[in-house]
Image (cartoon, rainbow, N blue to C red; front, side, top):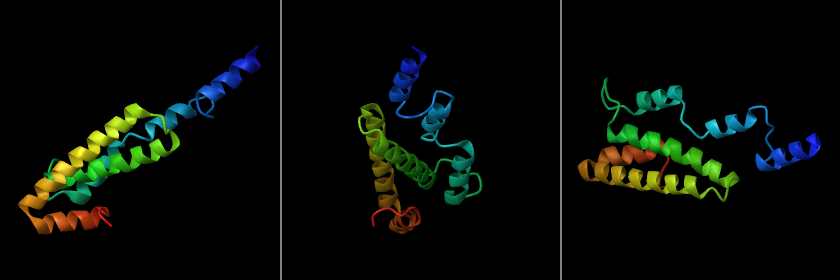
Length: 117
């Protein structure tokens, strides 16, 4: 009976064991506080900057890349796909804003983040 339950749990979790590895995989999607602070430090425009469009685009880009990776594995995760599409739309709006304000800032940001190959 226990063998059947373990096989079912293994199939349900997509191959992860029930000892917490599944939760580790889910948490990889979220941006850690350290990584977020690192992104803010890399892209801030002045010393106390945390919310400039450059910082927001950098954070969104990191989240988009992480979520894209997740969706390659979990193709039927439509809820996360919707979140990804919302993030992509938000990033597009922010990039359009930066482009309208200052084309040099826009070009530098695109180059730094590796967007628009």
